[in-house]
Amino acid sequence: MALHILDHHLWFPPVSEALEDGLLAMGGDLRPERLILAYQQGIFPWFEEDIPLWWSPDPRFVLYPDRLKISKSMQQLLRRGAFDFTINRDFAAVIRSC
Image (cartoon, rainbow, N blue to C red; front, top):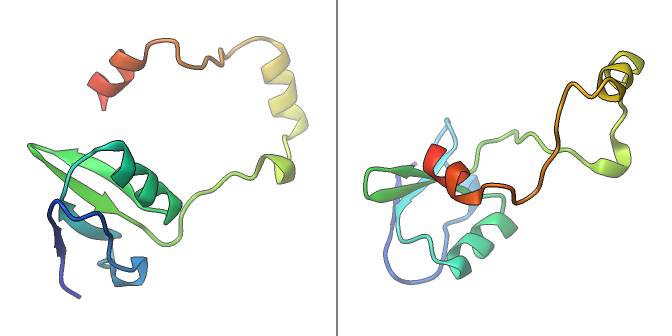
């Protein structure tokens, strides 16, 4: 299959056309509308020097909170406070690290 090149038009090729490693397309932009469209289809960007690469690997790792089973050993670890769970604490640093 060929790698799709995106331009300013808001679209993505079918995820079934991704390469074996999951690479689907390159180009386009990271505006919110495109990101939302991508995430709705199981596609995510990975920035590559001035041009986004769009991925949709199969299979994907997805956690469903209502089906998540936490083992007893993990529950004990969580109760000990070994981890911190935060939301929107340092968005800029997260983006820089990506």
